[in-house]
View 1 (cartoon, rainbow, N blue to C red):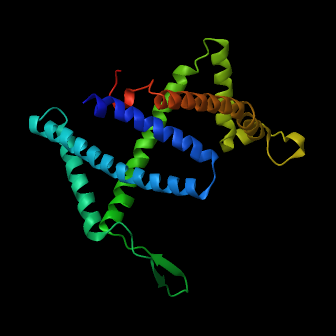
View 2 (tube, rainbow, N blue to C red):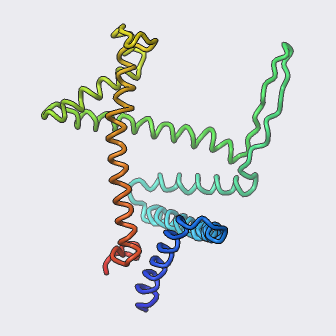
Length: 237
């Protein structure tokens, strides 16, 4: 059992990691064909992972409904929404028919959209709920930013002042507050200064963070390839 649970996954990770490393630096027809074939296999494996995720989701909410734990009504909503979306997608398809042109009396042409059941629910249920979720998330971000930017230290003071400048420079109020045109341009001072902050100090910090993330990804990949990192097998050695 150790062969299939421990040694085989490590061997597969090592072989595929080394193969993809050399494939990137050997731009031949054979390497391109290899990448295309492996990508197809990735899609097949991802489809099985999707089925496993659907089963896990439905099984989790089934036990919540069976035991009637607090909040089990939301599990019912998940089941109903999942079944409606799945059935409408299989029966009516997910592609909306092309819009039908409608010519008015004044010569104006309108494009009348006709939705499938799946498209209608996606457009008028899923999209508004997603927008609502992200709009609520914006308030959590603002609350976290307020707690983080309280001027208790010099670094927090710099963050607070910079955040205020950027926020004012991204709204029309900032352009009206200081009627100063640097370099005799059309843009007023605050929008210009905001763009300078975003394109220079902020961009430099972002690039430093991205370089650190890249180095971390390389280190983690090497640990997985050489069998040092084994958490993808369920943790432990």
